[in-house]
Image 1: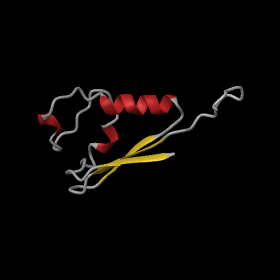
Image 2 (image 1 turned 60 degrees about the horizontal axis):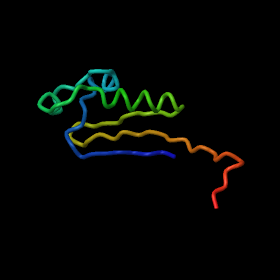
Image 3 (image 1 turned 45 degrees about the vertical axis):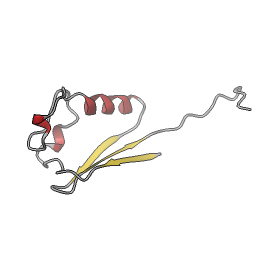
Image 4 (image 1 turned 120 degrees about the vertical axis):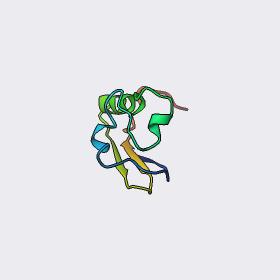
Length: 84
């Protein structure tokens, strides 16, 4: 399953994109420097998805917002499961 989460904010500057999944990294020039946070959320989300064999990526354009795209794999129920 492919999931996309988008906004219509200022976007993420291209120079920042390679770093946004790093622990403690907070992009500058997007208003992030004026909000609270430790810069851990995207790093944690990416790590969890990586551990489950999924992907997390971002697309962004100046003044057009950002989109985060990730995949989720569905698990097969165990054959002995009684789902009735």
